[in-house]
Every structure is written in structure tokens, then in C-alpha cells.
Image 1 (spheres, rainbow, N blue to C red):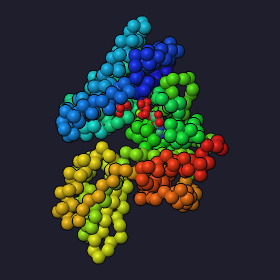
Image 2 (image 1 turned 30 degrees about the vertical axis):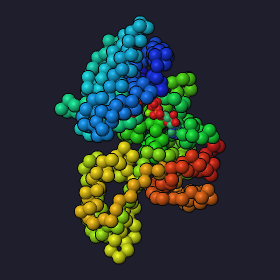
Image 3 (image 1 turned 180 degrees about the vertical axis):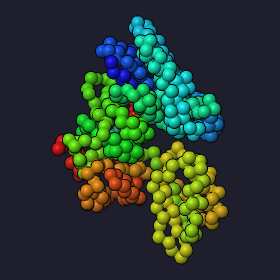
Image 4 (image 1 turned 90 degrees about the vertical axis):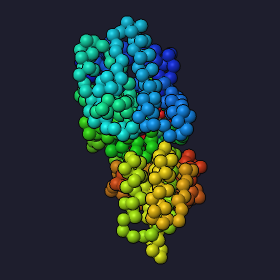
Length: 407
Ligand code: ADP
Ligand code: ASP
Ligand code: MG
């Protein structure tokens, strides 16, 4: 008997009919002789609705503890509904919330990291022949406060549970039938990958391909959990995310990702002396704001400009913190630009090839797309451009690197 963790995303549980369909799939998996743990997201649109309510109720800055109590509630609805439907279909099932399982996290509200998963209750219920339905996206800190794992975090709940249970594999059911060379909803020429390595998937997810939450891929890699990304609307096998093996294509470029959720900040005319970077970035990191790309311009007459990107959700808090530091440092002003997008190309074969970055820049030049920032790592090259060019940039890069053809 295998242990299988199945996660269903928001569009898969959007209404009662869809939840009934999931129930049928879950029962089929169970009748095939497997132990099944189901992890659910909130019904489509529900988390957005809750976030908007928190913002309206608070005037834009909700208390962070209460925010997590509120936004985690969407998953309570979907897990109880699926369990009710499973009961009605004659199955033994039990829903469990994050704090009931004891999905222990750190204390970083709205972006918490899972520290451990207590498998006791889940294993007991499985032994009694029950289907276990766990609320994704939520956990509990050591003081008993409810936490959430960041947008898209149910994937991470599923993989963490699969790792702790030593499940045979984890299936992520979503509204596309696998991982593609780029977002298939943005470019119809995107090609589905049969397999993708943990490292490539990690780079794609980190670059904004939201089909998997980045932390879920990190955990899958760390605990070697095989992950299948599949559609909840058909029977396709989907894409296997796994360890790199020798029959895997070592493509120079295997995917293109975009992230419209970035904002660019420039602190203008700061004195160029030791310690300025630390003074600027330490308050941000102390408030758990992740800074992605950083550029320090060449110094001129003892002054420099510092440009960097943060997630759009952090822009309000970054503004509040930076206003104070920039004034103390004597910077002349701070510019904010939210109309940007980060476009990345990813591929493990990049490490052994030259000319990949220059090809990317040439493609942009031919289309008249101005590059605002560049960053490179071993298997990823990212450029920040104006948001209006996002689709065009993805398409021309996908074409230029021949991604529609199978090698
Ligand atoms: P769920 O609600 O099921 O968690 P998400 O919306 O979080 O689903 O993720 C699925 C979406 O990810 C797809 O609808 C697709 O638009 C987007 N996506 C972005 N990049 C990719 C990619 N490379 N392959 C597949 N889907 C992608
Ligand atoms: N419901 C949460 C969200 O919309 C978590 C998830 O769907 O993975 O972000
Ligand atoms: Mg998701």
C-alpha cells in the first residue's frame, strides 16, 4: 500500500461540483489500495476576498496576527466541505486544520516557514481507514498563534506533509496539466515537460512561475519527494519534478518565467562610504522584506545611487522604513517604480555554455525592449523591464531559444 499526498488548488475546489469531482478522484485513489492525504487550498478567489476585507477593515495595515487568522479561514471551508462530501459518498474522512495536525512554523506572519509536521494524528486516522483532508497554507507557531505560509503556500503544506509521512509521492493538482517551458496561459506555444529537475523547478518557481510555491520545491529537493504536477480536470500523468538524472535533457535554456509582482526602488544620491548598504538593507531584512536584485551605481564625486527590487506586497512597509534611513543618510530622494516585470531564462545547461546572456540581450534589443536591471546565477539570467513588455519578452525569448521544439 502506497501513501499518496494529493494537493488541489483553488480552481480545483472552486464550487461544490468541482469538490465532488475531487472526492471521486480521491476515492478512486483510495480504492486502488492507497492511503490518501488530501491538502486543499481555499476556493478560487476566496483568499483574495479575505485579504481585501482585512485591508478595508484596517485602512491598509492590518494587525499581522489577526490577518493570518482571517486569511487562513478560506482553507477551513474547503477542507470541511470535501470531508462532508466524502462522508455523503460513504467514505470515512476527517478534516484537520494546521494547528490540529501541528504544522509547526516560525513566527513570521503571512510568510511563515514550516519547521516540522507532527504526523501522529494523520497516521492514526490513516490506520483507521480514513481519508485525511488537511488545510493547506496554514500552520501554528510554538505559542499557538495561527500563521500562513505566503501566497501559493498550500503546495508547501502538501510537500512538507509528504516528506514527514515519507509518502511515496506528492501530486499537485492544478488548472494546467503540468510544468511548461513557460506559462501556457501566456503563450500557446509553451511545451509541456515530462520531467524537470528540482534545481530547474526551483529557479523557475523563484523567478515567478507560480505553478509551484518555491519553498515546496526546496522541501521536495531536500527530502527527495517525487512531485507530479497534474490537472484536476483530466487523467494526464503531468510533469514529474525529480532529481536530475542522466536521461534528462540538459537544455541550455529549458524555461522562461516572468514575475509582475516586483517593484523597483532607487535611493538617489547617497554618500558613497562604507556601511551605507548595511544601513539601507538591515532594516528591510529585520522586517522580513526580501530584496531580490541590487545594483550600486558607479560613484560620482562621492555619491552613488542604489537600486533594488522588492515584492509589491512589501512596498508600503519598505517605503515607511526607507524614508527614515534615507533622510538620516542624506539621500536626495527615493524613486519607486511598480510598473516593472522580471523576465528570467532558466536551464542547467547554461553552466557550460557561453553566449546565453548576450543572446537574451540581443533579442530584447531587436524588439526595442530596454533592460533596467540584470542579474545572473549559475542556471538563471533575469532582466527587469517595463511591465508592458512582459508578454512580448516571454514570447520572443521562447522563440529565440527554440523552446517549442522537443529535442
Ligand atoms: P493553484 O491555484 O492550483 O495553486 P496557481 O494559479 O497557483 O494554481 O498555479 C497554476 C498556474 O501557474 C497556471 O494556471 C499557469 O498560468 C501558471 N504558470 C506559470 N508558469 C507556468 C509554467 N511554466 N508551467 C505551468 N504553469 C505555469
Ligand atoms: N489560498 C492561498 C492563496 O490563495 C494558498 C494557496 O492557494 O496555495 O494564496
Ligand atoms: Mg498555487
